[in-house]
Length: 143
Image (tube, rainbow, N blue to C red):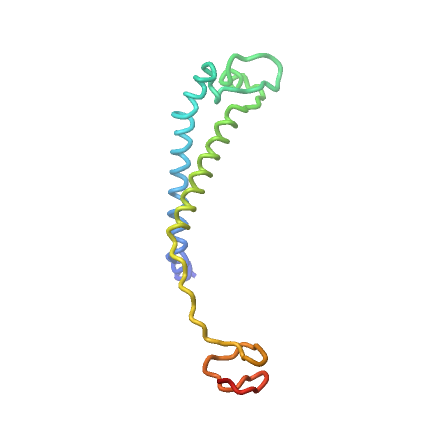
């Protein structure tokens, strides 16, 4: 069983998938940092100094000046600002994956056309081998 598992784990596509998952996780962190630290601050500044990550709706009683204060008090909150940041993360990751897949498809070589190994019988139009002298379906002679 151990030998079988080793053979499974060392196959090329399993290793490729593992590498893809690790790179994908790292890429996700890079995109999250890009959105949170580079993209959203200028957008928030353009919208009057708004910090999207701090936008929330208090579902409980009382008022809180910030999301951190509401969380510290244990108030139930609807954190739609964090959702906006996560949505922008997703859109950027999806766009990047789309562009990578599109580029890979463009680079992929089209498969060469397979040489024909059959021909059509002139009498019954059945598929017959190229070397056939007589049609196996209608028995007519093939020139």
